[in-house]
Amino acid sequence: MDLVVLAASSGVEMADYEQSIQELIDAFGRLPGIGPKSAQRITFHLLKSDKAESERLVSAVSSAVHKIRYCEVCFNFAESERCAICRDENRDPHLLCVVEEPRDVVAIERTREFRGRYHVLGGAIDHLQGVGPDQLKIRELLIRAAEEGITEVILCTNPNIEGEATALYLKRVLDIPGLTVSRIASGLPVGGDLEYADELTLGRAIEGRRTLEQ
Amino acid sequence: MTLYRDVGVVLRTYKLGEADRIIVFCTQNSGKVRAVAKGVRKTKSKFGSRLEVGSHVLLQLYEGRGDLDIVNQAELVETGVELRSDLTRMGRVASMLEAVDGVIQEGQANPAMYEMLVGGLRAVAKWDTALVTPAFFFRLLEAEGVGLQVEGCAVCGETDELVSIDMDQGGLRCTQHREGMAISPQAVLILQLILGGRVATALALPAGPAIFEVEHLASKMLERHLDRRLRSLHVFDHT
Ligand SMILES: [Zn+2]
Ligand SMILES: [Zn+2]
Image (cartoon, rainbow over all chains, first blue to last red; front, side):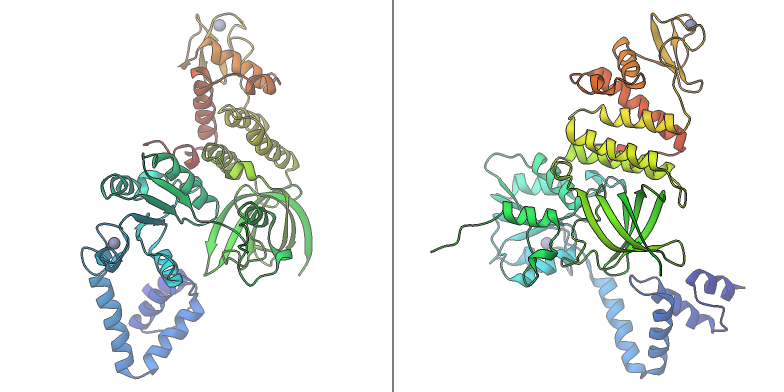
């Protein structure tokens, strides 16, 4: 009976798997981007491959789950109270980059262009999902802006409706004397063709043009 | 797969897999349409910003086998730039979209609802008043068959001293037949303008507490009709 229920809920056709196998397939199937077929494939790959490889996966998952928490300061992922970036004294403490998710920190870090610190909101204002400012780390951001001697906040939320709404709201509440609030520029993706750009992106790119140095 | 064209407004979107989204449209000819936009979350997607909520787009879709179609092409009918640069307007647009999403049906053409929504979005861009949302809600309720008697008392027809509104019976009440929520004379006037076909006059009124009253009333009536809360109306409730 359990098997029938599990199989139905995972979308996999009824099959006579041992319960532990079915549980593993279900667990993989709940991961983002993994459908029932892939969940089955991963499960059988693990079961067929050498035990040490599976053990490494198990211990990597278990140690990440136990060690990782949110940084007390910026709400990025951290292995201790503060994340590596907040602990790094070579970082510019006056410059703060506000992002939606920890993965955005990783994306910006990869550019090697930014030397300040971060603040991770944990999402974006979303009218249709009912996500408002009090479900995000905005109160904490305002406290940091007031107490940490920050001179510039760069709003790096996504350039979509929710990210724009969040940036507009933050601009409104970060009205603190001596604090510059800037918004990440939007424009054309490098390496693409102009003719494929949508009207809004192209319009923004023209609006945000810059003078070429002689 | 059959290819078809339509024009519609994006009501909402859901993330799907790594880079796709399910887009829900209010279309002119097919009512509510749910379709997959492949790769739309990538920065180099051919769709760009065209399939974001509130976008008014000319569409080319593949009819899917199940209840999901596939977006092949989308062209903007209106850019709606002014709707993206103002948080208050974004909220107004969101509640219109949420309301329409709550009433239109899949596979059931509803060109009137599409026209109403497009008109609503244009009104948000044109008029900077909180009244655009209640005006839209009342029209939508009317289209749904939920009328409101505002010319006189719903019981005796008295046109002076209308002091309360009874949402259950759908009408204003005089001092003698007072029932339901209290209402100010200014709010009565606004209701009469909106429901009497003089919306433009109402939208041009200066901001004031009566507008807030009408906003509250319209939201209550719509939430009651849909039998659920409209999320977009309560996003800033605690701030
Ligand atoms: Zn940190
Ligand atoms: Zn009466």
